[in-house]
Amino acid sequence: MKEFRKAIVFLPDGMADDPLPELGGKTPLEYACTPAMDSIAARGASGTFLTLPPALPTSSDVANMSVLGFQPELNYPGRGPIEAASQNIQLADDDVAWRCNLVYVSDDGILRDYSAGHLDDADSAILMAALKAEFDSEKVTFHHGVSYRNLLVLHGKEFCDRIDYQKPDSSQDIPVDQLRLKALDDSPEAAHTVEFLEQLSEKAAKFLAAHPLNAGRTAPANWIWPWSPGYRPRMQLFSERYAGRSGAVISAVDVIKGLGKCTGMSVIDVPGATGFLDTNYSGKVQAALKAIEEHDLVYVHLEAIDECSHLGDLKLKLQAIEEFDAKIVSPILAALRDSPYNFAVLPDHPVPIKLRKHTTTPVPLAICGPVIKQPDPITCFSETLAPSGALGNLKKEELIRKILEL
Image (cartoon, rainbow, N blue to C red):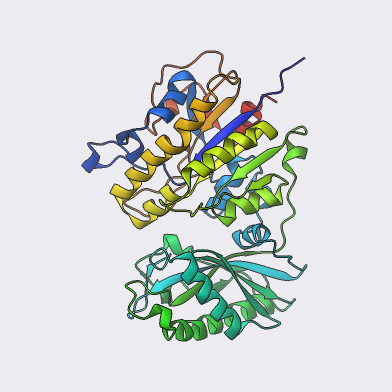
């Protein structure tokens, strides 16, 4: 009888990058000190994984759906409804949920910061409560998420999700007038949705600019940015997709938690998990070690590297990579060194530090554990070396099926 295999996936969001002259032609991953991730490559096999299929948004929801094998090219619901699921917002059939960043737009009308200076969560909660009190109606409701990552829900058949939008973290330093919402068809619903949100955004901008919490801030949260709309998700359960196996996700951000809830995975909340460098690393480690006792697959996600990449801050990106390796991967591998588990490490997508936005290049992947019968010659985890590894180019369900040995 085949052994029932367990696995842990380490997911450093946005870690993949391009070679940089200031790092001697190495990528941040290759330059950083990462002995734990390197040990996975050295003891196992490397390859690449296609996380961002063509004709879909280059966003983390798409990428993580791909890593988990849920084929976004067939059933991508939009970022808004995924995060609504995380917040237990019950969407009606005709509700359209939007991710709604609080952003900083400068006086000259340019989107300067997709995160409003990485808005403190407590301040974000105050601003979202103020927006809610001022603008909530039978047609629209605001919902606070984590930091700048919030939600807006439109209610009624007069609205739709057939709207072209621009991702704020891919649009920094561009005039807002070049980033407007656009209808994707000639329907009255699409035209009305664009008009309604444009008017709401104008009113919200005036309201936020006058809010005392924004006074004197270098990057005030003075604009709402609705994007990635969709209706209530209907996704296959993890256990149905993977022969009755159970899975758990550990993350600070709603997009990963929402994917977990939409697919019936256990969502483990870690107190002090923030989505940035000040996150509770040890709490995530302990949560992962407990979860692997109860589940077949544990998905350990870290957001901080992605955030540092969008900031364009190389020093912080290197710090975030090394902390992920030392404070997440290393202690989990050490605690489970005598366990017959499979381990995989891969980013969900690249965020080249020079571009500060996602690209569609397949990401490096390394796997170690009983599933790898013969290690390949690669001894470090690297964007440059991974494509020549024995795993080849994986996609869709191939990673999860491989590490669960299905």
